[in-house]
Length: 212
Image 1 (cartoon, rainbow, N blue to C red):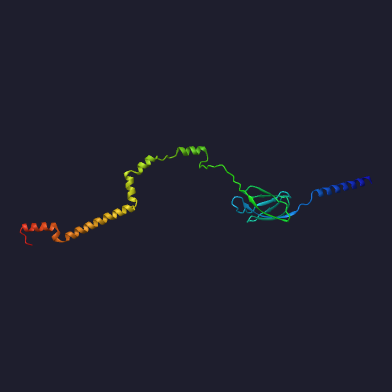
Image 2: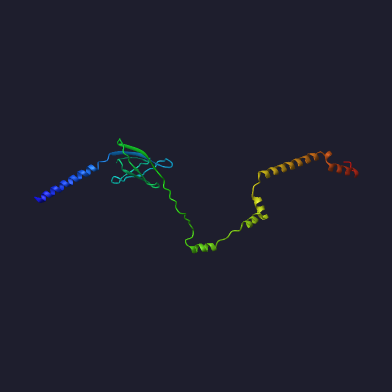
């Protein structure tokens, strides 16, 4: 009988303790949390963000390709947003008179500066030394300029390079002048009376007694 009485007293004490504990921790109000996730710098939506309710069993949700999300949580729950390339963002759901809460979540991009990496075509220092010793050092600028300005180089370039607009104009003007000069000379000597060579030949024939 004493054992049964002690067991009953223990159960009564546990029941009273649980009742007091339940009164001290009232049930949180459920909230429909809805929103859109955007980049803090450009206001561009951030798709497929992982959302976790760290205040309630780490419940996990996900935003869609347009950055939209909607799920049920409690007032004062801490919601964590994570995405690749962005800093982790936490939001606390405020108390609300209604059963709904909406907002725009801004996430900052995470920029990581990586050290510079120099890729060399040699597998070891020994290979680099051999390649350096076998390196064919090019001529300096003065030797290159002298070689390019030599007579043979200039003649070869002049032979291959096309005429410029100015050179074509000068060539055409000289050709036109020569053609006009030749045409005037031919027209002038076409008449025997204006040809001095014809007169010289005529006088020479008269002096020799030719009557042709």
